[in-house]
Length: 47
Image 1 (spheres, rainbow, N blue to C red):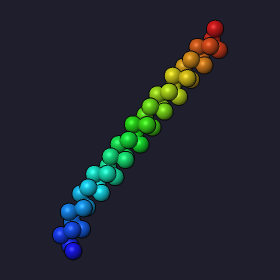
Image 2 (cartoon, rainbow, N blue to C red):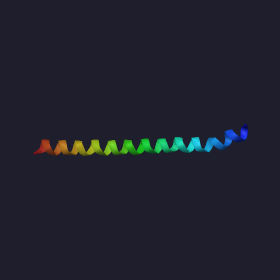
Image 3 (cartoon, rainbow, N blue to C red):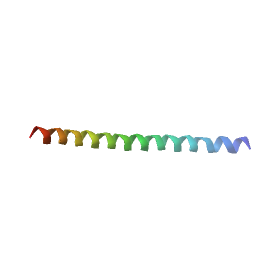
Image 4 (cartoon, rainbow, N blue to C red):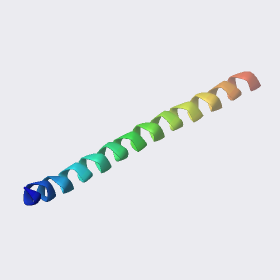
């Protein structure tokens, strides 16, 4: 029973790390999109 738990645990940790990595990547993409839209807005106002 304990051996089964220890064998599945690394997969769960890897899945959690993968979800965090995907979340961080999506967050970075959203941040870059927001920054670009703000720059475009400022340039539009300046013109």
